[in-house]
Length: 304
Image (tube, rainbow, N blue to C red; front, side):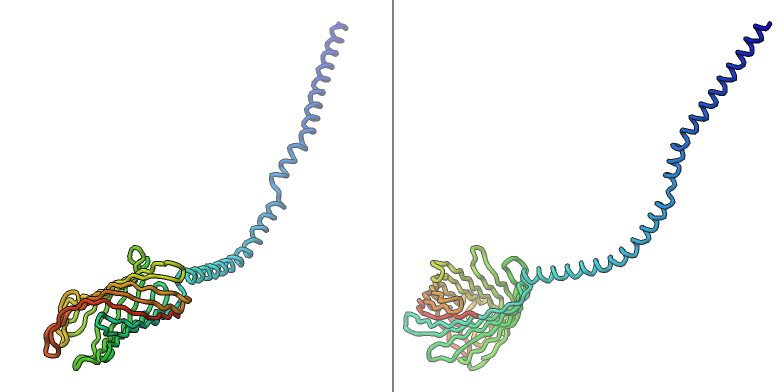
């Protein structure tokens, strides 16, 4: 019995020791893990970081609100300046050019005529004003001249549409010395760089006509230049006191050779073949036949 009691007591003591050891180990293990579980809890709720984020967001708002209008204003000024510079570099500037020309031509019979021309253009590449004055002074006759004022609008590469008025004066006529015509036409470069002017004229007494002028510069050297040219006038209708026959009225095919002393002074010589259709019989003039003639001459041209 004593042995049995001792065995029971020993067994009970061992059990108590085992239970107390497990509890101690569990508490020790729990105590060791506590710092690791508390640390992330403090990191998950960073009060100071949250306040810093809110303060940073609030602080940035007035800075951006103040900077935005300044940046937009600065960009607007930069864009306006760039647009103005682009326009100025690509045809927006106003320019002016004047050409003054005078030539003396003689025909096979020795009759001469002095032809003078003045052309002024002013404006931009898109919108221009042309003023053209032409005068003929034949030997033993009064001068006759015409002046055109044209508005020119660019509509395509190298081409302008022009419209305006033409004033004509002929002191050799007894009546209808002054006349005014409406003008519409085109001005530009035809293929192969032929500078071309084509106009339609409509005036009183059913006077309707067409004109064509085309020319091209061919450089032999930098200063010696030849220029073939063609001038045509076609009468579509004419019931005036000095009526011309309908059809091809005048034609002149020529070759001009000039020497450019500089870009402002250019003397030249001219050889051309001309055709003039006759006039109709009216109360103020006699009927005439057509004429063919060679023309020779020289002149000088100024550009400024």
